[in-house]
Amino acid sequence: MNEHAFTDAERAAVYRAIGERRDMRHFTKGEVAPELLARLLEAAHQAPSVGLMQPWRFIRITDRSLRQRIQAQVEAERVLTAEALGERSDDFMKLKVEGINDCAEVLVAALMDDREKHIFGRRTLPEMDLASLSCAIQNLWLAARAEGLGMGWVSLFEPQALADLLGMPSGAKPLAILCLGPVEVFYPAPMLVLEGWTTVRPLSDLLFENQWGES
Image 1: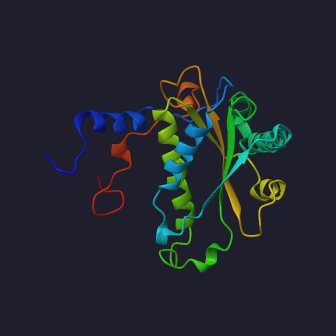
Image 2: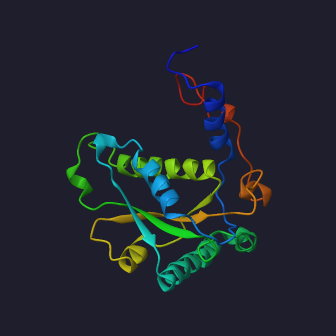
């Protein structure tokens, strides 16, 4: 065995968290203890980032009226998304796409301002700041699942409108509204699969060797 490998039980726990992570939409309100929330955010903060720029910024939404205004922005975009989907509009409107008013905690994950001054790792791939924030969100997601909490990533919003609502400086950009909290049950499969919206493609369809399209 590789001397740096975790124990069998530890490895199984890591793979279980990955396999059972779900984009949750149904919550049972409740609370997240302050020390637990701090632990989850610290897990997010340990994510890798290009050039160690740590572009993530998290805004915890504790004002109930502000939470409702955020939810209103999401609802407005939900309607516009449905219109853009054309013939799938009715099916989309039947989906539950967020749990903002039901979850224990709402966090907005955003990219910091003044990102253009960070060149290391971004000269040809400036979107690596977004990739770094996504890693932080995934860390938070997996840690939440290990702690028995559900989390949902909501992306149905107009970024500038949300940035204005939250007083973000010019150049900062919200990427995700994160719903976090206790759930009654975790979905046995991705919700969009359970609802018949789409199916999961096997890895073999997405893995190439040497050249694009060659399996």
